[in-house]
Amino acid sequence: MIVCVCNAVRERQIRELVAQSDSRVRMRDLREQLGVCGDCGKCARRARGILRDCADCAGDPVAGHAPAGGFAGIPVTAGTTAAGACAAT
Image 1: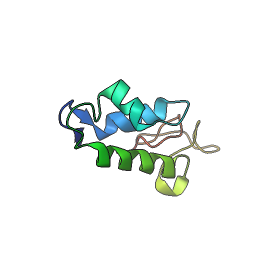
Image 2 (image 1 turned 90 degrees about the horizontal axis):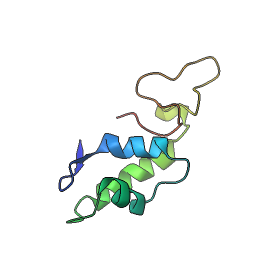
Image 3 (image 1 turned 120 degrees about the vertical axis):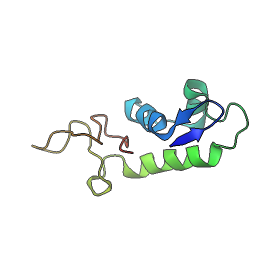
Image 4 (image 1 turned 30 degrees about the vertical axis):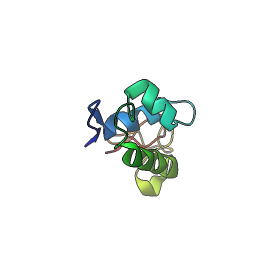
């Protein structure tokens, strides 16, 4: 799903950025690295919601996201990331 029409940024790109980051991703990071909210700003609410979702489900097996390296004896599969963040959607 497209989040930022002005810069053609997809939800998946935001989730991948969060998954690859070693620290908390902020709106400023989205603007600097992907261009989110760099023009009209209409994407701000959706982008914040995605960041909130990723923060809420990072490493939460119930949410369907695997922590770094997967769970004991269960490899990381499609729809999850080895980084432990929420890249499934």
